[in-house]
Image (cartoon, rainbow, N blue to C red; front, side, top):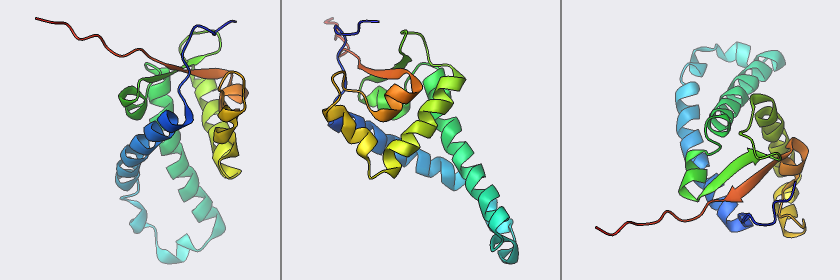
Length: 148
Protein backbone atom coordinates (compact mmCIF):
# COMPACT_ATOMS: atom_id res chain seq x y z
CA UNK A 1 0.00 0.00 0.00
CA UNK A 2 1.38 3.45 -0.95
CA UNK A 3 1.48 6.00 1.87
CA UNK A 4 3.70 8.65 0.26
CA UNK A 5 1.01 11.34 0.59
CA UNK A 6 0.94 11.00 4.39
CA UNK A 7 3.15 12.97 6.71
CA UNK A 8 5.24 10.91 9.09
CA UNK A 9 6.06 12.25 12.56
CA UNK A 10 9.75 12.80 13.21
CA UNK A 11 11.80 11.50 16.09
CA UNK A 12 11.49 14.66 18.23
CA UNK A 13 7.68 14.66 17.95
CA UNK A 14 7.52 10.96 18.81
CA UNK A 15 9.76 11.43 21.84
CA UNK A 16 7.67 14.39 23.01
CA UNK A 17 4.53 12.24 22.88
CA UNK A 18 6.35 9.45 24.72
CA UNK A 19 7.40 11.86 27.50
CA UNK A 20 3.82 13.10 27.86
CA UNK A 21 2.52 9.54 28.03
CA UNK A 22 5.27 8.55 30.49
CA UNK A 23 3.95 11.12 32.97
CA UNK A 24 0.42 9.75 32.63
CA UNK A 25 1.65 6.17 32.86
CA UNK A 26 3.64 6.97 36.02
CA UNK A 27 0.44 8.16 37.68
CA UNK A 28 -1.41 5.03 36.58
CA UNK A 29 1.38 2.80 37.90
CA UNK A 30 1.31 4.59 41.25
CA UNK A 31 -2.36 3.68 41.54
CA UNK A 32 -1.89 0.15 40.20
CA UNK A 33 1.05 -0.37 42.55
CA UNK A 34 -0.81 0.82 45.65
CA UNK A 35 -1.61 -2.71 46.88
CA UNK A 36 1.95 -4.00 46.35
CA UNK A 37 3.23 -2.97 49.81
CA UNK A 38 0.71 -5.48 51.19
CA UNK A 39 2.86 -8.29 49.77
CA UNK A 40 5.05 -9.46 52.68
CA UNK A 41 8.70 -8.50 52.37
CA UNK A 42 9.77 -12.13 52.72
CA UNK A 43 7.58 -13.06 49.72
CA UNK A 44 8.99 -10.20 47.63
CA UNK A 45 12.40 -11.86 47.80
CA UNK A 46 11.12 -14.90 45.92
CA UNK A 47 11.90 -14.80 42.19
CA UNK A 48 8.44 -15.95 41.15
CA UNK A 49 6.71 -13.32 43.31
CA UNK A 50 8.91 -10.61 41.73
CA UNK A 51 8.03 -12.04 38.30
CA UNK A 52 4.31 -11.85 39.10
CA UNK A 53 4.66 -8.25 40.29
CA UNK A 54 6.64 -7.25 37.19
CA UNK A 55 4.14 -8.98 34.91
CA UNK A 56 1.26 -7.25 36.72
CA UNK A 57 2.83 -3.81 36.20
CA UNK A 58 3.77 -4.59 32.59
CA UNK A 59 0.16 -5.63 31.96
CA UNK A 60 -1.01 -2.22 33.19
CA UNK A 61 1.44 -0.55 30.80
CA UNK A 62 0.10 -2.63 27.91
CA UNK A 63 -3.51 -1.88 28.84
CA UNK A 64 -2.73 1.85 28.91
CA UNK A 65 -1.19 1.92 25.45
CA UNK A 66 -3.30 -0.84 23.93
CA UNK A 67 -6.62 0.68 24.95
CA UNK A 68 -5.76 4.02 23.38
CA UNK A 69 -4.30 2.46 20.22
CA UNK A 70 -7.36 0.25 19.71
CA UNK A 71 -9.86 2.98 20.61
CA UNK A 72 -8.98 5.82 18.25
CA UNK A 73 -5.30 5.19 17.56
CA UNK A 74 -4.01 7.88 19.90
CA UNK A 75 -2.74 7.99 23.45
CA UNK A 76 -3.16 11.35 25.15
CA UNK A 77 0.45 12.21 24.31
CA UNK A 78 -0.10 11.24 20.69
CA UNK A 79 -3.23 13.40 20.58
CA UNK A 80 -1.31 16.39 21.96
CA UNK A 81 1.35 15.94 19.26
CA UNK A 82 -1.10 15.06 16.44
CA UNK A 83 0.16 11.51 15.95
CA UNK A 84 -2.06 8.55 15.15
CA UNK A 85 -1.24 4.87 14.82
CA UNK A 86 -2.99 2.66 12.27
CA UNK A 87 -2.37 -0.75 10.79
CA UNK A 88 -0.46 -0.87 7.51
CA UNK A 89 -3.76 -1.33 5.68
CA UNK A 90 -5.05 1.94 7.17
CA UNK A 91 -7.53 0.23 9.48
CA UNK A 92 -7.76 0.85 13.21
CA UNK A 93 -5.29 -1.13 15.32
CA UNK A 94 -6.63 -4.43 16.64
CA UNK A 95 -5.64 -5.88 20.01
CA UNK A 96 -3.33 -8.47 18.43
CA UNK A 97 -1.42 -5.74 16.58
CA UNK A 98 -1.38 -3.56 19.71
CA UNK A 99 0.21 -6.44 21.64
CA UNK A 100 2.84 -6.95 18.94
CA UNK A 101 3.55 -3.20 18.78
CA UNK A 102 3.91 -3.00 22.55
CA UNK A 103 6.32 -5.94 22.77
CA UNK A 104 8.32 -4.75 19.76
CA UNK A 105 8.54 -1.24 21.29
CA UNK A 106 10.11 -2.78 24.38
CA UNK A 107 12.69 -4.34 22.07
CA UNK A 108 13.22 -0.97 20.34
CA UNK A 109 14.01 0.62 23.72
CA UNK A 110 15.95 -2.30 25.15
CA UNK A 111 18.71 -2.11 22.56
CA UNK A 112 19.81 1.40 23.57
CA UNK A 113 16.83 2.96 21.78
CA UNK A 114 18.16 1.86 18.38
CA UNK A 115 14.70 0.77 17.29
CA UNK A 116 13.51 4.36 17.62
CA UNK A 117 16.61 5.91 16.10
CA UNK A 118 16.09 3.66 13.09
CA UNK A 119 13.47 6.11 11.75
CA UNK A 120 16.37 8.36 10.70
CA UNK A 121 17.53 5.68 8.25
CA UNK A 122 14.26 4.05 7.26
CA UNK A 123 12.93 5.27 3.89
CA UNK A 124 9.38 5.44 5.30
CA UNK A 125 10.45 6.89 8.67
CA UNK A 126 9.40 3.75 10.51
CA UNK A 127 10.78 2.41 13.78
CA UNK A 128 11.44 -1.29 14.35
CA UNK A 129 8.18 -1.72 16.24
CA UNK A 130 6.24 -0.09 13.38
CA UNK A 131 7.63 -2.64 10.94
CA UNK A 132 7.42 -5.66 13.26
CA UNK A 133 3.78 -4.96 14.19
CA UNK A 134 2.72 -3.93 10.68
CA UNK A 135 1.52 -0.58 11.99
CA UNK A 136 2.54 2.97 11.13
CA UNK A 137 2.32 6.44 12.58
CA UNK A 138 0.84 9.36 10.72
CA UNK A 139 1.08 13.04 11.47
CA UNK A 140 -2.37 14.56 11.54
CA UNK A 141 -2.99 18.02 10.08
CA UNK A 142 -3.42 21.00 12.38
CA UNK A 143 -7.00 21.69 13.32
CA UNK A 144 -8.50 24.57 11.40
CA UNK A 145 -9.70 27.51 13.44
CA UNK A 146 -13.03 28.94 12.46
CA UNK A 147 -13.47 32.68 12.50
CA UNK A 148 -16.67 33.95 14.09
